[in-house]
Amino acid sequence: MKSLMELRVAAVFAISGAWLLGTNLSAQTPPAVASRNVAAYVKFTVARRGLYQMHYPLMPLDRQVVTVNDIMAHLPNGSAIVFWDAVIQNYSAGDAAEVKLLGAWRPGTNNLVGKTFWLQVGDSVHSAFEIYLTGEAPDSRSLPVADVPLDACGPEAVNLVGYAYPVEMRWTNTAFAAAAAEGSAIIVFDSTAGAFRTSAKHNGRWSRDLVLPPGQGFWLNARGATNWTEVKPYAYP
Image (cartoon, rainbow, N blue to C red; front, side):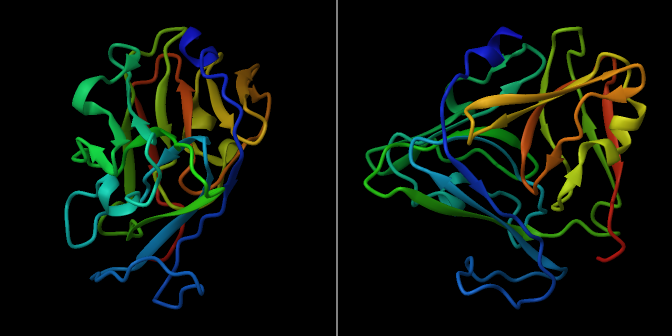
């Protein structure tokens, strides 16, 4: 997977995520939101010049679109977001990517809800930035079962995906891990080490039991699977 090996970037990554019931938030709170269901957020602390795989696991609130201007307007110039096109096995180009130049995200219109992407943080005099992914926690009405389409599932092909629900999850506890074909692999970028951590399935067992924090993106080599189905892992909401 040549495209993975080209991403040799050392970074510092501190991630803490939680989905919250009600409105009793921490002292550093995200913007106020209005919701018919349970409002939630996932908090990231990202470093300048850092590189991250991110996934947006929340439902939209009073709007159907969440853009970089809604949640990352404070990031420094030079920051960028890129999406992966699994059909062509390459990164999306042109307006299907985002870059911040001269104080503005361009084009600033890509919807991040439900998407997985790479975030590159630009250089800055500030050492770290907080990012809040806000929305509604998927519930028994909005997303009792999540279906994630998978494309181009050849031996060397990858999808850039994330766990659909805003909770920490051990990879081996997912429905996909249990049903995955031999040779399937999950590849997570460890920003602290600046390296990829890989777990592959051989003889019915995964080589490593990776823990996915809320909002963590990762590469998935699915070996023949065309869909990833997960049932909501919590009883409420």
